Amino acid sequence: MGRGTLIGPVIVAIGVVVAAIAFAVVTVLIDTADSGTDLRLQRLEETVARLEAAAVEDRARIEALTQDQTRLREDMSLLANRAPVQTVAPVEDGQEVITTDPAALLPDEDFENPPTEDLTEQMILAKTRFNKGITQPRNRTMLEILGQPREGYNTECQGVTNPRLKALLETRQIGPIKVTMLKPALDSLERVMNRLKETDPDIYAKVGTAGALCVRFIRGSSTSISNHSWATAIDLTLEGQLDGFADGGTQFGLLILAEYFNEEGWFWGAAYNREDSMHFEVGEETLRKWQEEGKL
Image 1 (spheres, one colour):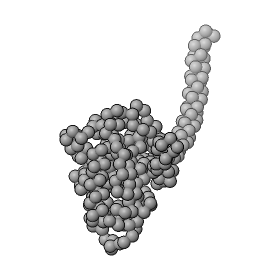
Image 2: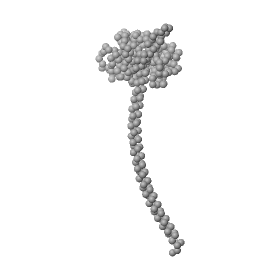
Image 3: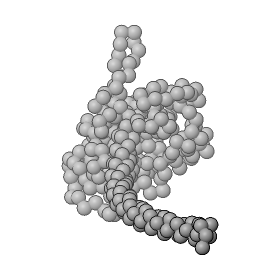
Image 4: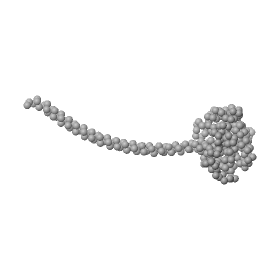
């Protein structure tokens, strides 16, 4: 056999050997790669599991913080909706200066409490007994009926600049309190106080006010206007004491007052989600009635 005839088989044999070696190397590499990949995947899965568990915990914390924030905002809004106590002091030129008392900013069907002579004694509140058929007016309703109280707002008390609304305001001494409100609201308040004087003179003698007219945003908001801005709301005190805010109870005397105000179509703030028993405001139905009668 010649040399030329051996080259072909030798080359084929070498190729087969090389292919076998290459196959073996590739197989080893693939096996190694598969093992490394499995390890990396396992580690990634463990990391993802840890991250998912941490995310669940974070979501729970965020939900709890959001609920706390919502409650705090509601507390701040309702507490801020109390108008500051205003006192009138004479000055040399004969004008009156209105000052604000910062302390005023601080904040189930039947009663099972025995009769009491203490007007400021805290009673357990049965909300369902009050505000029947009376709706708390929202900003949209107030703007529709009375318009904007002024051009701009902030969180501090300012005066009314709307000429139409300003013409409806009056400052009046009604029994033991002096307030500035809408004229029909003052007429209504006067009826309440007259009935109170006749039937509960002790309460009548001890009623005070923590303010009425106060044009501003509800604190903590840049859009919601306090209903005190339209002079349709008033905060009342008994024996100079503010009722505890959002504690689920209310002063005994305010329970009596609420019945008179409800009869006049006023909404009682004790029915808020976060009770504000010192707050009384003219209900939407009453405002629309006054509008129909041409009083607004």
